Length: 254
Image (cartoon, rainbow, N blue to C red; front, top):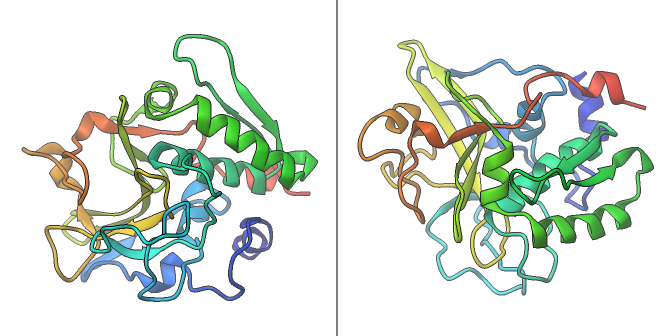
């Protein structure tokens, strides 16, 4: 199934034979990556293609981001030349790309508490239509609406979960991978876009000069889990897409 996912998954333009997130970032010493189901969102994120080592983060207009000290890698994912694909937008983009890969009907609800939904049927395989739909999603939805439609997580953080503080502005960080040590210690690899719209990137850990992996225990202790450009996240900020840990690709693959 993993080989099938590689053939179907990453429909946006990216470098052939790009190094994957899993290949570049080994689990912390004494830890191993958690198991993920083939075809799950976590499997999709673990195999994301990366730009070459040392790549800079660029903004939507092609200029370099002022801060180049917050990322450990740049994901090879395009950004349209408009200030739209910011933090929550990039999370929605990756969830939508996952839905596109499996031929699903993708939906976001931009008005919390109201039934209006923005939907796209990925069985059409219409990339131009998908791109136009994403522009509408990015314009109408954001961190507040995304937080409202994600499910709170009471247990352990898993790949594909979202650390999110909805607001105007708010911020969202995606859990790209998770590893667990022999002592049970849990480690998180995180990714974000930011403001203004910019390339999605793997975050450095400001508490470590040698590893980008974050200690998940920080979510449950003061002051929380601190990322380079935002206030700390805490346990009740962890949310999850419905069905993100199942294996829907097997049901939807053509």
